[in-house]
Each structure stands twice: as structure tokens, then as C-alpha cells.
Length: 214
Image (cartoon, rainbow, N blue to C red; front, side, top):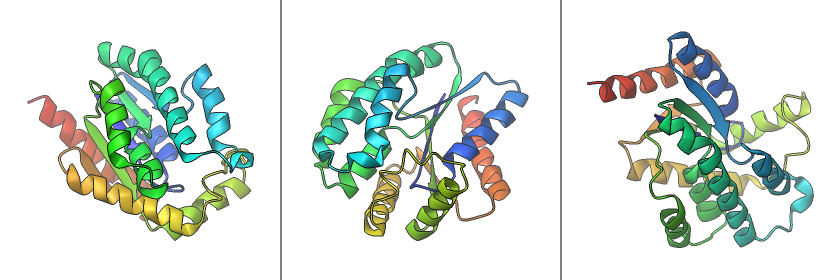
């Protein structure tokens, strides 16, 4: 099963994935966690370009193609082998992030992004996408607090340094995508306390697992 976690900066995806991994592992499931960008050695190098705040001049199309290159490596090196082995995959960002960030927020053509993805990755789609949603100003404030207290690296702040309007567009984009695919998406209120958010996530995952086991 392929489960993706999406959301704006500061939505809590990374910490929630860690907790969900522990919970599912305790129940006997074979689980792996992964992320985009940067799940492989090559992806780590791509990530260093994409998230480095010194690269503010990165062209949006170049940004898109770097994310696509990272995803190609990620799929072949991690996701496809894990799916073939019957594992549950918990992935921090995937294709929907590309649509939200490079499409809705950067203004690149959604049709172009979808066509590129269909051409290269059409056979790999998430079974469940958990959208951790909260107001952009709250997410951005959380992200900067985590950076300042050392929970997140200061070297990867290119997106955090974008204006609030950019992050609001990302959030709107995610909600638009979720509205178009209600069977795949589950929207989680990420403004709630961490424990409450994790309980909501686990309930959604268990519903899908039980549904697929019928």
C-alpha cells in the first residue's frame, strides 16, 4: 500500500509519519518511510539544490524538472521495489506536491505537469493521500519556529522564505486537488494537537486497510 502525506510547510508531516510508522510496525505491518525530494543518494544531491535558500534564482521550469528527476530515481530505487515486496509505504510528499507548488503556486501549466507525470509515472499512484491542512500563516510560523530551535536545518529554507501569499496558493491548490479526488484524499485538521492529529490519521489509514482486506 502506497500512502502519501501532503501539506504546506509546518503542517507536521514528518513527525506524524514517524509516529504512524511506529504504530503500524507494532501491529506487525512491514512499513517503510521515504520522502521527496531526497530519498536516494542522487535525490539528496537534487534536494540540496531545490531547498537551498541561496538558489532563489532557480527557474520554475528547472525546479519542476529537478523534482521529476528526483521522483524517477525515487520510484525505481525505493517505491516500486517496496510495493513489489508488499510493504506499506509512508511517503512525505509526492506528485500532488508538484501540482500544488509548481502548478498552483508557481503558475506552471497544470496540464504540462500532469502530462509529464502521466508519461513517466502513470502506473504508480497513491492508494491514500493524507492532506494535513492548516492556515498558511500558522504553518509558516511553525516551520520557522522549528528552524530556529534546531528541529529543522537552516540550510533548507528556500520555500519557507517565500511570501505568505505563495503558501496560501499552495494550500488552496491542495484543497482543490482533494476536492477533485475525494476517494483518494483524506483531509486532516493539522491545527489540532499532535496526538489528536495522529489519532485522526490512524483512523483514516485503518479504514483503508480494512476496506482493502474485505
